[in-house]
Image (cartoon, rainbow over all chains, first blue to last red; front, side, top):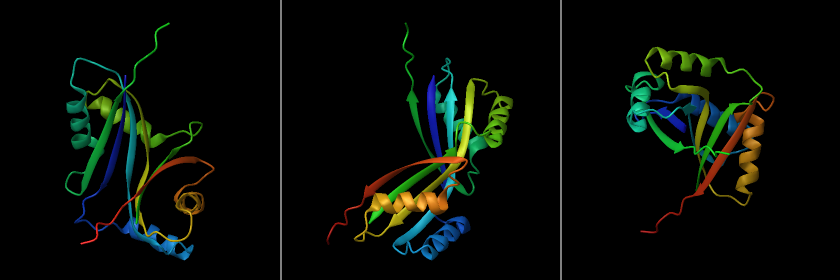
Length: 86
Length: 86
């Protein structure tokens, strides 16, 4: 079994109105030392091990469904969970 | 300057319809080995160093604005960026 975490954010060239809105709200709450905010999507997936390459599978999931590759960029972390027998 | 990453997900007891929808869609794309999907929010913040404790500040930002503590739980990572003097 794999535990996979995917982080999706807007590409730098794309305006992030949600991030701007959060920054403005934080400033109103007196967190005026906040310089910038980016808001994105976060996925946690549990994926059963098969014969297929897990990196390739996660890449395909990201490009086919989890992100809009025109506007968003993504990074991910894959951790293999070792089940304790006994 | 600090680089702060905040990960917000639904509490385990809360139904995650978005995560379920993503799982169903992945299964339709033949990723049938996906066991579970959780979708949440992801924030990247750049925060100027001040006299205040950064952990306390981030905790307050999370509980006051970034999360709905009734339904969501959060984790965060704080990294201090050292500026190289030219």
